[in-house]
Length: 410
Image (tube, rainbow, N blue to C red; front, side, top):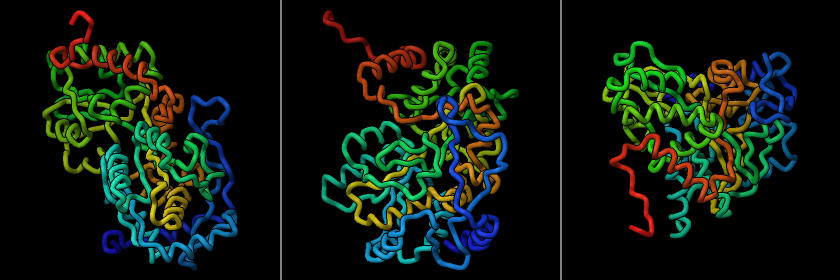
């Protein structure tokens, strides 16, 4: 690992020099729709970065942490490693693991990369079988998280960093946001002369050049992709009838229904399809060099933001090690480590130190255009979900794939 990221020790030292010696100043950024919260600051002036690492010590406990936190560290030394199920790649985790294990070298961390929804399925199967399972789950699957909460599988834990995080990043009961994942428009530069930068732009192309784009626009099938379902749900809820008109326009091209980001990227990057939308930036950006003709854009008229949420599980075998990792990821140093691996952090007090950040997305599209995929009680309503699915199917699913309505006459 050290050979892969030889500069991380130096970067950690640089971070510690850049950060001042005072405790963090609590801030309350984002999201736009919440009236009682102040928006992102116009600039980072007045929000000085502060340290959660000392270059002189292997680990450093900030003054605002519990006086008993040292016992958590000591107790972690008796535990048998840390198992994480995450929907982010091993490459993006490499900087996190190297810096974390520089602090806690006795903790052997295994990160198992799984699709967003697979983490919960695997965890449940292993719990039922009585097998060792994840100590921590990190996933953007908001539907899976809601089921996880209902099953009582989230360990209640209040992070030491909680007071310095925005309210939208705290679902409650121990679930926090580790990083954000803007969902993108992607396109093949050889096939599209003037690429769309908005959903409205896609609909204009679909209506004006229907024959050209027939069966070349890739979309997530909401019946097979939980990310696709959530993105469409929150986006249409935000956009209202105008959003449904856009989806109806896309539907006239007989879009190609897909179940995974990787397949969508392969097809658009290779030129099999011309464009797609609501595609994970975590999946797209690492593959840009693989597909030179692949282009991408934030979605200017409504930018969905998936949340890479993190929680310690009830069935964990290493609770203290898990607490150390969760607090690390939410700290300033952990957020910077995530950005080194290509993930997008959000803590306001590291804006000037991170090459990627939520504020940069906000500046690109406008804060009022951000659409956060948050906990949504209506997603538990069978009738509301059924109504939404029927309308989406009518707009985007080719008629030959629609299942006939079951009526008493049938």
